[in-house]
Amino acid sequence: MAPTPGTPGIVSFVGAGPGDPDLLTLRAVRAIEAAEVVVHDRLVPAAILALAGPGARLVDAGKEGFGPSVPQAEIDAMLVAFARSGARVVRLKSGDPGVFGRLEEEIEALEAAGIPWEIVPGITSAAAAAAIGQSLTRRGRNSGVHLVTGHDAKGFADHDWRALARPGEVAAIYMGKRAARYIAGRLLMHGALPETPVSVVENASRPDERVLATTLGALPEALEAAGLTGPAVILLGLAPRRAGAELHLPEPVVAWEAFL
Ligand code: SAH
Image (cartoon, rainbow, N blue to C red):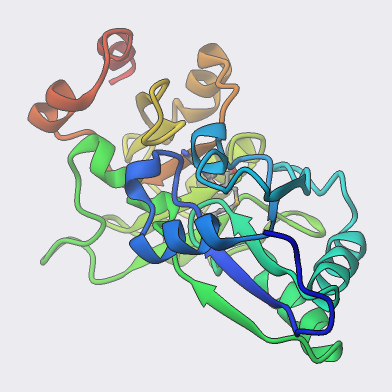
């Protein structure tokens, strides 16, 4: 489908989930199928991009965990330009577009240009707790869950370490691989127990999903030894539930339990 000049375009911010196309919402699938242009992050796998129609234009916005390789201003300008040409644009982001996805910056650019937009939510990476058979909250253990990032625009991100260090707290740490040593250090300094369980889920929901079960004290060394190369979410305060882990984890992961 070619864009129709003269008719106003729209930008749909669509959550692609953690990677498995089965974890897309129906609304996300419909939006991708109907898109004339798909501007996607690097983390969105080919199997999801393949849902776009044969005539759709796919644009890799090239953002990686550590800073964008396409400047944000350029992405904003691109969205505005495609929508102005009348295109139905899908801005496809991994997970949920509203979690560490610079969603508001892009919305503000569209609003400044008077372009309509909508949000289609997706499953955020914290749902990788499912891969370890765990629940993010549990009565009597934690009455809230923290979604935190390992780094922000200024470098390693600062957090309320004392609150995160309390026994029973659960946090899903995004973009945390490189910051792991810093995060573990801060938490231990603020009273967290070294034996606090930590699970790291790499490539959640993808065929190459791996789980690393470790403790807060051993996290930096365990991560270094594991040499993870894919996106990974660090689940602070959660150990794999054995039955779930055995049911869901592929072969090599069993050996990872040596870190327990
Ligand atoms: N909007 C996304 C997060 C983008 S930030 C969401 O809601 O999930 C990028 C970070 O997301 C990565 O550094 C990693 O921590 C996490 N992530 C994305 N996809 C992942 C996956 N398949 N498995 C594990 N972590 C993932």
